[in-house]
Image 1 (tube, one colour):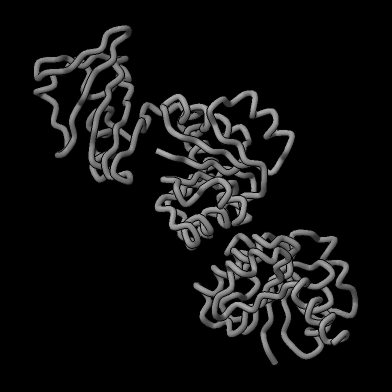
Image 2 (cartoon, helix red, strand yellow; image 1 turned 120 degrees about the vertical axis):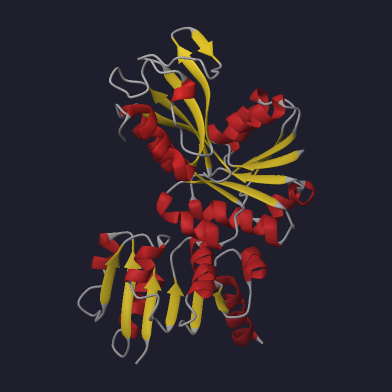
Amino acid sequence: MFIIIAGAGRLGILLAKKLKEDKHQVSIIDKSEIVCNKLAEELKGVLIIQGDATNPEVLKSAKVEKADVLVSTTSSDADNIIICNIAKEAFSIKRTVSRVNDPKHLLLYKHMGIDVPIDSTTILARIVEEEASFSDVMNLLSVKKGRLSIVRVDIPPNAPVVNKMLKDISLPPNSVLISILRGPEIIVPSGITKILSGDEIIAATIIDNEKQLIRSLIGRL
Amino acid sequence: MKYIVIVGCGKTGRELAREFSHQHNVVVIDKSKYALDALGEDFNGKKVLGDALDLKVLENAGAREADILVLATGNDNVNIVISKVAKKLYKNIKKIALQVYDTSKKKIFSEEGLIIVNKTYILVEVFKKCLL
Protein backbone atom coordinates (compact mmCIF):
# COMPACT_ATOMS: atom_id res chain seq x y z
CA MET A 1 0.00 0.00 0.00
CA PHE A 2 0.99 3.63 -0.46
CA ILE A 3 0.52 5.59 2.76
CA ILE A 4 1.03 9.30 3.33
CA ILE A 5 1.72 10.57 6.82
CA ALA A 6 1.21 14.23 7.66
CA GLY A 7 3.20 15.34 10.69
CA ALA A 8 6.59 13.94 11.71
CA GLY A 9 6.30 14.04 15.46
CA ARG A 10 7.00 10.98 17.60
CA LEU A 11 3.85 9.23 16.37
CA GLY A 12 4.41 10.07 12.70
CA ILE A 13 8.01 8.87 12.72
CA LEU A 14 7.26 5.65 14.60
CA LEU A 15 4.42 4.91 12.22
CA ALA A 16 6.60 5.58 9.16
CA LYS A 17 9.23 3.15 10.47
CA LYS A 18 6.73 0.40 11.20
CA LEU A 19 4.97 0.74 7.85
CA LYS A 20 8.31 0.74 6.04
CA GLU A 21 9.31 -2.46 7.88
CA ASP A 22 6.06 -4.01 6.65
CA LYS A 23 7.14 -3.14 3.09
CA HIS A 24 4.62 -0.38 2.48
CA GLN A 25 5.43 2.66 0.38
CA VAL A 26 5.52 5.65 2.73
CA SER A 27 5.72 9.42 2.31
CA ILE A 28 5.92 11.77 5.25
CA ILE A 29 5.20 15.51 5.29
CA ASP A 30 6.35 17.99 7.93
CA LYS A 31 6.48 21.80 8.17
CA SER A 32 9.88 21.98 9.82
CA GLU A 33 13.01 22.00 7.69
CA ILE A 34 15.13 20.90 10.66
CA VAL A 35 12.89 17.89 11.31
CA CYS A 36 12.91 16.92 7.63
CA ASN A 37 16.69 17.13 7.30
CA LYS A 38 17.12 14.95 10.37
CA LEU A 39 14.58 12.45 9.05
CA ALA A 40 16.35 12.16 5.71
CA GLU A 41 19.22 10.42 7.50
CA GLU A 42 17.04 8.40 9.82
CA LEU A 43 14.35 7.09 7.48
CA LYS A 44 15.85 5.46 4.42
CA GLY A 45 13.50 4.72 1.56
CA VAL A 46 10.80 7.08 2.80
CA LEU A 47 9.94 10.11 0.69
CA ILE A 48 10.21 13.19 2.89
CA ILE A 49 8.41 16.37 1.92
CA GLN A 50 8.94 19.66 3.68
CA GLY A 51 5.84 21.84 3.71
CA ASP A 52 2.48 22.63 5.25
CA ALA A 53 0.23 19.64 4.58
CA THR A 54 -2.88 21.80 4.91
CA ASN A 55 -1.74 23.44 1.67
CA PRO A 56 -3.20 21.52 -1.29
CA GLU A 57 -0.08 22.18 -3.38
CA VAL A 58 2.06 20.39 -0.81
CA LEU A 59 -0.29 17.41 -0.75
CA LYS A 60 -0.13 17.35 -4.53
CA SER A 61 3.68 17.22 -4.50
CA ALA A 62 3.41 14.22 -2.17
CA LYS A 63 1.35 12.52 -4.91
CA VAL A 64 -1.58 12.24 -2.56
CA GLU A 65 -3.93 11.26 -5.39
CA LYS A 66 -2.04 7.96 -5.68
CA ALA A 67 -2.19 7.13 -1.97
CA ASP A 68 -4.38 4.41 -0.49
CA VAL A 69 -4.48 5.93 2.97
CA LEU A 70 -3.67 9.31 4.46
CA VAL A 71 -2.77 9.50 8.14
CA SER A 72 -2.68 12.86 9.90
CA THR A 73 -0.72 13.07 13.13
CA THR A 74 -0.09 16.78 13.71
CA SER A 75 -0.65 18.34 17.10
CA SER A 76 -3.34 20.70 15.77
CA ASP A 77 -6.84 19.28 15.43
CA ALA A 78 -7.91 21.97 12.96
CA ASP A 79 -4.90 21.10 10.78
CA ASN A 80 -5.61 17.36 10.95
CA ILE A 81 -9.22 17.89 9.94
CA ILE A 82 -8.31 20.19 7.04
CA ILE A 83 -5.59 17.79 5.79
CA CYS A 84 -7.98 14.82 5.79
CA ASN A 85 -10.78 16.92 4.31
CA ILE A 86 -8.65 18.16 1.38
CA ALA A 87 -7.33 14.64 0.79
CA LYS A 88 -10.88 13.35 0.59
CA GLU A 89 -12.65 16.16 -1.24
CA ALA A 90 -9.95 17.34 -3.63
CA PHE A 91 -7.93 14.15 -4.14
CA SER A 92 -10.57 11.44 -3.57
CA ILE A 93 -8.56 9.49 -0.98
CA LYS A 94 -10.73 6.66 0.26
CA ARG A 95 -9.44 6.28 3.77
CA THR A 96 -8.33 9.01 6.14
CA VAL A 97 -7.07 8.26 9.62
CA SER A 98 -6.23 10.93 12.17
CA ARG A 99 -4.97 11.42 15.65
CA VAL A 100 -7.37 13.42 17.83
CA ASN A 101 -5.43 15.67 20.21
CA ASP A 102 -8.26 17.05 22.34
CA PRO A 103 -11.16 14.66 23.04
CA LYS A 104 -13.47 17.70 23.02
CA HIS A 105 -12.76 18.06 19.31
CA LEU A 106 -13.78 14.51 18.42
CA LEU A 107 -17.25 15.61 17.24
CA LEU A 108 -15.70 17.94 14.67
CA TYR A 109 -13.74 15.04 13.18
CA LYS A 110 -16.93 13.04 12.88
CA HIS A 111 -18.90 15.86 11.27
CA MET A 112 -16.09 16.55 8.80
CA GLY A 113 -16.10 12.96 7.58
CA ILE A 114 -12.72 11.73 8.79
CA ASP A 115 -12.95 7.93 8.44
CA VAL A 116 -11.02 6.88 11.52
CA PRO A 117 -10.46 9.50 14.22
CA ILE A 118 -8.27 8.03 16.96
CA ASP A 119 -8.78 9.66 20.32
CA SER A 120 -5.54 8.60 22.01
CA THR A 121 -6.25 10.47 25.24
CA THR A 122 -9.47 8.58 25.89
CA ILE A 123 -7.92 5.25 24.91
CA LEU A 124 -4.98 5.87 27.21
CA ALA A 125 -7.22 6.99 30.06
CA ARG A 126 -9.18 3.76 29.82
CA ILE A 127 -6.04 1.62 29.92
CA VAL A 128 -4.62 3.56 32.85
CA GLU A 129 -7.93 3.28 34.68
CA GLU A 130 -7.95 -0.49 34.18
CA GLU A 131 -4.34 -0.91 35.20
CA ALA A 132 -4.66 1.32 38.24
CA SER A 133 -7.81 -0.22 39.65
CA PHE A 134 -7.69 -3.35 41.78
CA SER A 135 -10.49 -4.91 39.85
CA ASP A 136 -10.53 -8.68 39.33
CA VAL A 137 -11.83 -8.11 35.83
CA MET A 138 -10.08 -6.55 32.88
CA ASN A 139 -11.36 -6.00 29.38
CA LEU A 140 -8.64 -7.22 27.04
CA LEU A 141 -10.18 -6.65 23.65
CA SER A 142 -13.39 -5.48 22.05
CA VAL A 143 -14.37 -6.78 18.65
CA LYS A 144 -17.13 -5.61 16.30
CA LYS A 145 -17.41 -2.15 17.82
CA GLY A 146 -17.52 -3.57 21.31
CA ARG A 147 -20.26 -6.14 20.78
CA LEU A 148 -17.95 -9.04 21.57
CA SER A 149 -15.46 -8.69 24.36
CA ILE A 150 -12.56 -10.76 25.59
CA VAL A 151 -12.08 -10.37 29.33
CA ARG A 152 -9.60 -11.53 31.93
CA VAL A 153 -11.08 -12.52 35.28
CA ASP A 154 -8.94 -13.24 38.35
CA ILE A 155 -10.54 -15.85 40.55
CA PRO A 156 -10.48 -14.86 44.24
CA PRO A 157 -10.46 -17.57 47.00
CA ASN A 158 -14.11 -16.95 47.89
CA ALA A 159 -15.45 -17.20 44.33
CA PRO A 160 -18.40 -19.59 43.82
CA VAL A 161 -16.58 -21.50 41.07
CA VAL A 162 -13.49 -22.41 43.11
CA ASN A 163 -12.84 -26.19 43.11
CA LYS A 164 -15.72 -26.78 40.73
CA MET A 165 -15.46 -28.55 37.39
CA LEU A 166 -16.40 -26.54 34.32
CA LYS A 167 -19.32 -28.85 33.50
CA ASP A 168 -20.88 -27.99 36.87
CA ILE A 169 -20.71 -24.23 36.32
CA SER A 170 -23.56 -22.50 34.56
CA LEU A 171 -22.43 -19.68 32.28
CA PRO A 172 -24.71 -17.21 30.52
CA PRO A 173 -25.48 -17.89 26.84
CA ASN A 174 -22.98 -16.75 24.22
CA SER A 175 -20.09 -16.91 26.66
CA VAL A 176 -17.13 -19.25 26.56
CA LEU A 177 -14.03 -19.79 28.66
CA ILE A 178 -11.04 -19.72 26.30
CA SER A 179 -8.22 -20.56 28.64
CA ILE A 180 -7.05 -20.68 32.22
CA LEU A 181 -3.72 -19.18 33.20
CA ARG A 182 -2.38 -20.92 36.29
CA GLY A 183 1.12 -19.73 37.18
CA PRO A 184 3.32 -20.62 34.22
CA GLU A 185 0.71 -23.05 32.87
CA ILE A 186 -1.77 -22.27 30.11
CA ILE A 187 -4.74 -24.64 30.22
CA VAL A 188 -7.27 -25.02 27.46
CA PRO A 189 -10.21 -26.12 29.56
CA SER A 190 -12.56 -29.05 29.02
CA GLY A 191 -15.66 -30.04 30.99
CA ILE A 192 -13.67 -31.76 33.71
CA THR A 193 -11.16 -28.95 34.22
CA LYS A 194 -11.35 -27.71 37.80
CA ILE A 195 -11.09 -23.99 38.55
CA LEU A 196 -8.75 -23.06 41.40
CA SER A 197 -8.37 -19.97 43.50
CA GLY A 198 -5.84 -17.61 41.87
CA ASP A 199 -6.59 -18.78 38.34
CA GLU A 200 -6.74 -16.15 35.65
CA ILE A 201 -9.53 -16.93 33.25
CA ILE A 202 -9.68 -15.61 29.72
CA ALA A 203 -13.24 -15.61 28.44
CA ALA A 204 -15.14 -14.36 25.41
CA THR A 205 -18.66 -13.03 25.76
CA ILE A 206 -21.15 -10.87 23.96
CA ILE A 207 -21.28 -7.53 25.68
CA ASP A 208 -24.86 -7.91 26.96
CA ASN A 209 -23.88 -10.95 29.01
CA GLU A 210 -20.56 -9.68 30.29
CA LYS A 211 -21.84 -8.72 33.74
CA GLN A 212 -23.71 -11.98 34.09
CA LEU A 213 -20.56 -13.93 33.16
CA ILE A 214 -18.49 -12.09 35.73
CA ARG A 215 -21.15 -12.61 38.38
CA SER A 216 -21.23 -16.35 37.75
CA LEU A 217 -17.45 -16.57 38.00
CA ILE A 218 -16.66 -14.39 40.99
CA GLY A 219 -20.06 -13.98 42.58
CA ARG A 220 -20.23 -10.20 42.37
CA LEU A 221 -19.39 -7.30 40.09
CA MET B 1 -31.86 43.26 15.76
CA LYS B 2 -29.79 40.21 14.87
CA TYR B 3 -28.05 37.59 16.98
CA ILE B 4 -24.38 37.58 15.95
CA VAL B 5 -21.70 35.17 17.19
CA ILE B 6 -18.10 36.20 16.58
CA VAL B 7 -15.30 33.68 17.06
CA GLY B 8 -11.87 35.22 17.62
CA CYS B 9 -11.25 38.49 19.37
CA GLY B 10 -8.19 39.77 17.56
CA LYS B 11 -8.08 43.13 15.80
CA THR B 12 -10.80 42.27 13.27
CA GLY B 13 -13.08 40.40 15.64
CA ARG B 14 -12.82 43.13 18.23
CA GLU B 15 -13.68 45.98 15.87
CA LEU B 16 -16.62 44.05 14.44
CA ALA B 17 -17.86 43.13 17.90
CA ARG B 18 -17.76 46.71 19.15
CA GLU B 19 -19.53 48.08 16.13
CA PHE B 20 -22.22 45.39 15.89
CA SER B 21 -22.90 45.45 19.62
CA HIS B 22 -24.51 48.90 19.46
CA GLN B 23 -27.41 47.65 17.38
CA HIS B 24 -27.33 43.87 17.63
CA ASN B 25 -27.16 41.04 20.09
CA VAL B 26 -23.45 40.05 20.02
CA VAL B 27 -21.54 37.18 21.63
CA VAL B 28 -17.75 36.99 21.28
CA ILE B 29 -15.78 33.77 21.86
CA ASP B 30 -12.04 33.70 22.48
CA LYS B 31 -9.59 31.38 24.21
CA SER B 32 -7.80 34.28 25.84
CA LYS B 33 -9.24 36.29 28.72
CA TYR B 34 -6.81 39.02 27.85
CA ALA B 35 -8.27 39.33 24.34
CA LEU B 36 -11.82 39.51 25.70
CA ASP B 37 -10.86 42.15 28.26
CA ALA B 38 -9.49 44.27 25.41
CA LEU B 39 -13.06 44.74 24.13
CA GLY B 40 -13.32 47.51 26.70
CA GLU B 41 -16.24 49.66 27.81
CA ASP B 42 -17.41 50.34 24.31
CA PHE B 43 -18.58 46.75 23.84
CA ASN B 44 -22.16 46.04 24.77
CA GLY B 45 -22.52 42.28 24.45
CA LYS B 46 -21.66 38.91 25.93
CA LYS B 47 -18.17 37.39 26.24
CA VAL B 48 -17.49 33.65 26.24
CA LEU B 49 -14.09 32.39 27.31
CA GLY B 50 -13.36 29.06 25.63
CA ASP B 51 -12.30 26.97 22.67
CA ALA B 52 -14.77 27.26 19.78
CA LEU B 53 -13.56 23.95 18.29
CA ASP B 54 -15.46 22.44 21.21
CA LEU B 55 -19.05 22.40 19.95
CA LYS B 56 -20.33 22.72 23.51
CA VAL B 57 -18.63 26.10 23.80
CA LEU B 58 -20.04 27.18 20.45
CA GLU B 59 -23.53 26.14 21.52
CA ASN B 60 -23.21 27.82 24.91
CA ALA B 61 -22.52 31.00 22.98
CA GLY B 62 -25.84 30.50 21.21
CA ALA B 63 -24.88 28.82 17.91
CA ARG B 64 -28.34 27.23 17.84
CA GLU B 65 -30.12 30.58 17.98
CA ALA B 66 -27.74 32.83 16.04
CA ASP B 67 -28.54 34.55 12.74
CA ILE B 68 -24.96 35.34 11.80
CA LEU B 69 -21.64 33.64 12.52
CA VAL B 70 -18.28 35.35 11.98
CA LEU B 71 -15.01 33.38 12.12
CA ALA B 72 -12.19 35.80 12.72
CA THR B 73 -9.50 33.79 14.48
CA GLY B 74 -6.04 34.24 13.00
CA ASN B 75 -5.97 30.58 11.99
CA ASP B 76 -7.39 29.70 8.55
CA ASN B 77 -7.86 26.04 9.39
CA VAL B 78 -9.79 26.78 12.57
CA ASN B 79 -12.03 29.23 10.70
CA ILE B 80 -12.70 26.78 7.88
CA VAL B 81 -13.45 23.79 10.12
CA ILE B 82 -15.87 25.70 12.35
CA SER B 83 -17.63 27.34 9.40
CA LYS B 84 -18.21 24.05 7.59
CA VAL B 85 -19.47 22.22 10.66
CA ALA B 86 -21.68 25.15 11.68
CA LYS B 87 -23.19 25.30 8.21
CA LYS B 88 -24.02 21.62 8.45
CA LEU B 89 -25.36 21.62 12.00
CA TYR B 90 -27.03 24.97 12.59
CA LYS B 91 -29.64 25.67 9.94
CA ASN B 92 -30.77 28.72 11.92
CA ILE B 93 -27.63 30.62 10.89
CA LYS B 94 -28.41 32.64 7.77
CA LYS B 95 -24.97 34.03 7.05
CA ILE B 96 -21.52 32.62 7.83
CA ALA B 97 -18.48 34.77 7.10
CA LEU B 98 -14.89 33.68 7.63
CA GLN B 99 -11.48 35.17 7.30
CA VAL B 100 -9.06 33.12 5.18
CA TYR B 101 -5.52 34.40 4.62
CA ASP B 102 -4.29 31.67 2.29
CA THR B 103 -5.58 32.35 -1.23
CA SER B 104 -5.19 28.71 -2.33
CA LYS B 105 -7.51 27.65 0.49
CA LYS B 106 -10.05 30.29 -0.46
CA LYS B 107 -10.37 28.52 -3.82
CA ILE B 108 -10.70 25.01 -2.41
CA PHE B 109 -13.16 25.76 0.36
CA SER B 110 -15.43 28.18 -1.48
CA GLU B 111 -18.94 26.85 -1.34
CA GLU B 112 -22.42 28.23 -1.39
CA GLY B 113 -23.45 29.79 1.86
CA LEU B 114 -19.94 30.60 3.08
CA ILE B 115 -18.68 34.15 2.68
CA ILE B 116 -14.90 33.94 2.50
CA VAL B 117 -13.05 37.18 3.20
CA ASN B 118 -9.52 37.25 1.90
CA LYS B 119 -7.25 40.24 2.51
CA THR B 120 -5.24 39.84 -0.68
CA TYR B 121 -8.34 39.77 -2.89
CA ILE B 122 -9.74 42.83 -1.13
CA LEU B 123 -6.49 44.74 -1.49
CA VAL B 124 -6.24 43.86 -5.16
CA GLU B 125 -9.78 45.12 -5.73
CA VAL B 126 -9.06 48.36 -3.88
CA PHE B 127 -5.85 48.96 -5.81
CA LYS B 128 -7.63 48.33 -9.08
CA LYS B 129 -10.37 50.81 -8.19
CA CYS B 130 -7.87 53.46 -7.12
CA LEU B 131 -5.57 53.08 -10.08
CA LEU B 132 -7.74 52.40 -13.07
